[in-house]
Length: 557
Image (cartoon, rainbow, N blue to C red; front, side, top):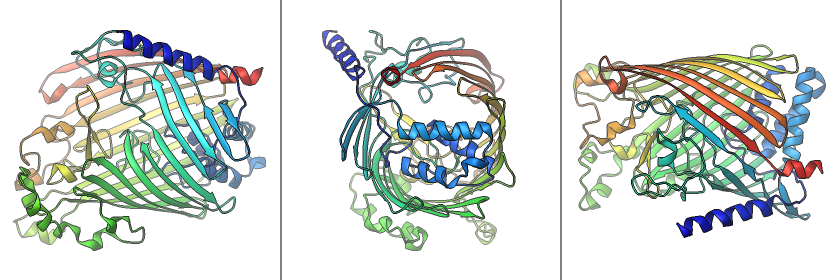
């Protein structure tokens, strides 16, 4: 108890010292803009006003954001667009952080106090606004910069651990002095976001960036998470080399999901006629140590025929009980396609396709194969219109995933991650859509946003079959995988499908730059809950919070 109290006191002292004073500074050019950063919505709104696309298929840096802003014609924007352009540029050139800097080096801390309260009526149902949406009680991101070439950041914070955050009777995000199954409430598994990013802008239009870090990644801008690579998978170690320009972007990435589980990716984007962004993603999941051949940015993974090359490696491993290695693989392939089309001002169509496995007709006709197809589709439309003093937005999106999308012959090369944290049970997350395989989903939403306030209403209908949860990998051996023609030919949603209806509301009020207050009520109803025929569960939840950023008060003085 004394140790915990001492940690509380030291952290609060650090928080107070960090808010005493300092100079404001522009964000480092190589800083990575996290998923959910308001810059992404701003760039989307501004580019849609001009019916132009930009390479937003993955996370970008401040330098890339400034390049995109520079490519836009501010004078052609609406009154609302001009104001948004100016506020975005102001944010990128000075975000209110405490800083110490000279001509070459910079250090900054961006303190925030973020109290939140929660309430949920049904213990059986999981939170909608769960640990992915919640904020720590105190956040202290630390940033270091070296001119415009290097940025280093880590998100130091003080908050609840994952087990407490997911608990039904958790009402406050301050880690109160209570335990769950003997586990202390403070989250010591941090940081969740940390990186070093180095790059060089050859001009206002061309640049290169290398990053090594821990965090989330994505492929494609969507409403509910990408079927190819979703930013709902948090805390993944990664390394990436990228080249960007107004017309072509290319990146080679490697993500470490677990020990001896690596996802290698090549991501190529091209912007055609300023109206269409087309992305091609090739990936391979490898259940083996790091290999040099997969680091080649100009190679084609499929050309390695790697699924035939691990026989000797399997024989060398002693004591292995992974009987699914008899399928002679350790390799899981991925093909992803993404397009973003701007046929007119204020609107965009987008679509995604992902594939792990596809059997050609001749393979099916011989009657011997029991390998199921693994494919997924996602498409939507988004509109953003300047109206009044802000922007009106609306959209719709649909998803279909095959029963064995992400699920391959072995756990080690299936497209999911199992993460372990101190004093917490393991968490399994899909690499792609958070709804998983064996799912059909549709969502519609509408909202309105100004500098002062924001409101958004969403409805989601989701049908999930019995293969949709990563808990399927708890089955012994390889019983989670298809072993019959009947299993191979299943369609989504399979078995006793759980049908969910969710209505969510988000609202916020920002009277000053240093203060934002928000509310998030939600309702959900699930038929055939937990795939139990006839079981019905429903309930409401509510979360309230505020974000206080004291350094903006220093700026006002």
